[in-house]
Length: 213
Image (cartoon, rainbow, N blue to C red; front, top):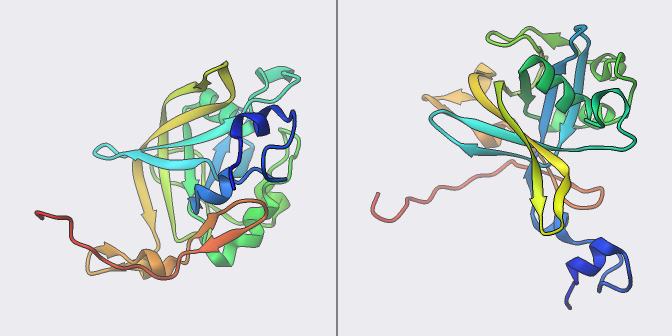
């Protein structure tokens, strides 16, 4: 079979499948559970599956967030984007299988002056290098300083999604998952996003040496 992505995006006829397969194929995607602070100090916490590491030394991550309409008082920016832009900082919490339900609960849209962490009954822990806290119990968290934010381009112009880039200035790792100086990623049982309403959990890894190494 063949899926016509352009027709599916336009919604103007049979694209080949009733649901877009894109997210089910670019998968699993890591989840960036982003904690940020409003200028008034309210903690915002939201999961983003358009999240990825993009560079190292220095380490840089990005999350992609939708700009919504009507614009409202912050130009239509989602809270995580608006807070990161205003304060210059955010924390990317990594989601373990044990925290999957809590992560999902924080995807609920709340008013800007309400905390998703409080709504989900989550405890927060101070970060070391940035003001936004991390979620207690996460296997790891990346403390980030914003270095850029820009719209995603496409052939029709500017996409409704924007990218927020953060330089990692510190990394919290639960001591249980550090063995002989290496992080045991599989032991963390990190949750990944698939398509539709499906998720995965990483619980097995394997090694391969690069040619010439």
